[in-house]
Amino acid sequence: MRTLLYILAFNISAISFAQDPQLFDNIWYLYEVQSSDFGTFYDVSLINPPISPSLTIPPNLNYNGEGACNIFSGTYEFLPPEELSSINFTATTIDCGIQQHNFFENEYFSFISDKFWYTITQDGQGKVLTLENGVFGHAVFKSYSLSASNFQKNEFLLYPNPVKNNLFLSSDENIGNLNIKIFNIEGKLLSTQNTTFEKQVSIDVSSLVNGIYFLNIEDESGNVEIKKFIKE
Image (cartoon, rainbow, N blue to C red; front, side, top):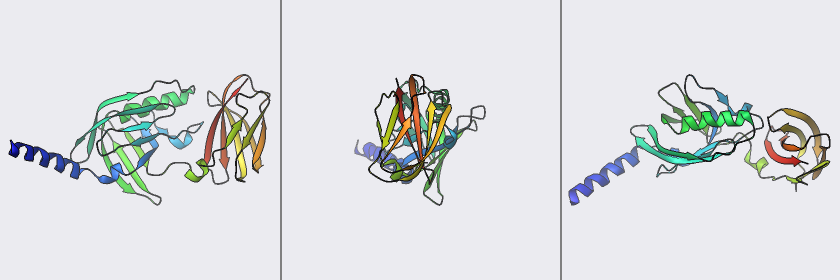
């Protein structure tokens, strides 16, 4: 019995050791994905309104992440030397309200819930995780997000929300020049406003019809923050 337990423990240890520990050290931010040779290719940086899809894989292989508006989780099985196979997958089923976001999630979730080989390399800013499956699908993740984290921590305050006429955007910091865009729920660009931001700025939304909209806030360095608001 002891011999059997020793062999089992040794095999588990060997499999764990074979996995690259870098796989578990990061939140991986998705940059591009295509589920197969017949799938749609998505460059995440070109999706509007912007999204921040991600993937986290801990050492126990119970992975989780985020798509455009839904979250997912599951369990991978490690197949030496560098292959992962999803043995279960679940995701929330919220309608993102934007057709491109829904289509993207279908592609992303289809890929991430399957089986693939992985490699980890370096670029000038951090680590790059590349996943490839047997039907010429691939996904590229990086250990840093598309938007600078310091900008995201500014936490703009948007009020009143819902709004009738004037929407106010405020922050504790003087950020400088901002490019503010309004998108409707279909992702269509409705207006653009360039302004010098000093603690607060007013945005006239009186001409918008009632509904849900997205405010795309971009600073001089290209960092983006997205706010949702309701026009009534």
